Length: 88
Image 1 (cartoon, rainbow, N blue to C red):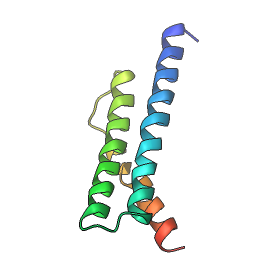
Image 2: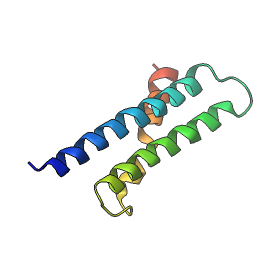
Image 3: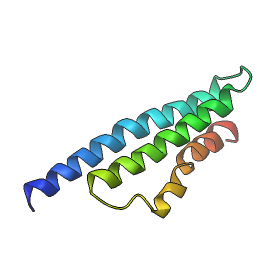
């Protein structure tokens, strides 16, 4: 394996870990502690945007097209957090 490919893997992994951690935190905060008007929806939108930015960042690091069905998966993680926290 070439060093450039390893760099891409490491950068992609770090990007996903950092951005998805914040995305999950926003989704969990919105599901549990945000009772003020519109805060839940706002935190959910921020969480989805962070997920979409993670997908875009990984695609850009690997020099792939941004037109991908992976962007449809951006709301999946926040929705799963909402489901687990609110309807357990």
